[in-house]
Image 1 (cartoon, rainbow, N blue to C red):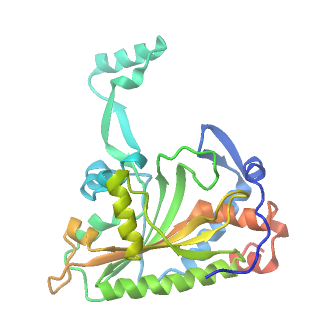
Image 2 (tube, one colour):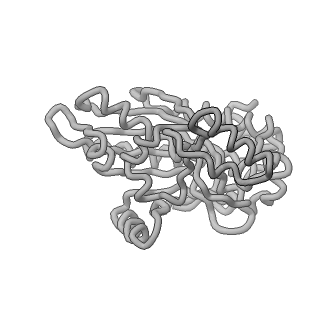
Image 3 (cartoon, helix red, strand yellow):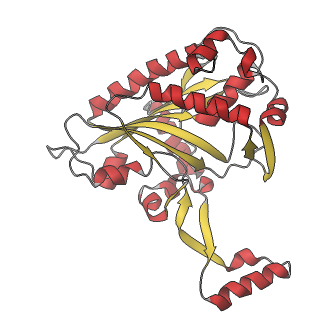
Length: 305
């Protein structure tokens, strides 16, 4: 599904200069008030589309290392993981590391892993929370979750931030419930993109699985249509960028966390994910750097007037 012809996006460097400030590392930027105002408006727009039965959670930018390991992330995406390390031991051990730093030596060799990782996606913490409630009710469960996320993908491209914000609506229930949820959200996402006057198209997609085995997993994911993406031109050069995704996890998280319905059947799950920063950059890339000059219809939808 393709929308009408669009003009070429605003140049990446122009967006970077106007809306961000460098912080010394590729893919990590300070964000200006003009940018954050649009982020806030976009978040409110998504909230207005939130399912009536959704329970909201807002997660910190870190999560349990053990929980992420249990969910199999290290097997599938080890190249993206950001572990948190710290200085452990007594005063002498810590002072030894400090002294190495004073001497210009590599003090980080003295650190060891903490029990936390940087969250790679907003939805991961919700499954153990759901599992603690016991049987999944007949109507299923729906959640609205959000987090600041991290993926180790250093890049100068604005659509490939290492630190970014993700918003998700997560559905847990019977396979038919997940299918209905995902199909409905693909329709709603189309309406949202059109209301924001963003050019887009849908396509089957795969997650960035690691290694040769990962290539087979990605091919299987595409073949089974487990993941779709809504792609929008964000960069002035190159192909469009995935700004929303629509995912069917099948029984993966149900098996991992023991999510069963009241009849003892294993629950399935799915989610719709909004790349908040990518969508915001897409708005500036499409409509220009000055929000007050954006199309009236877009401003009305975002309630920025």
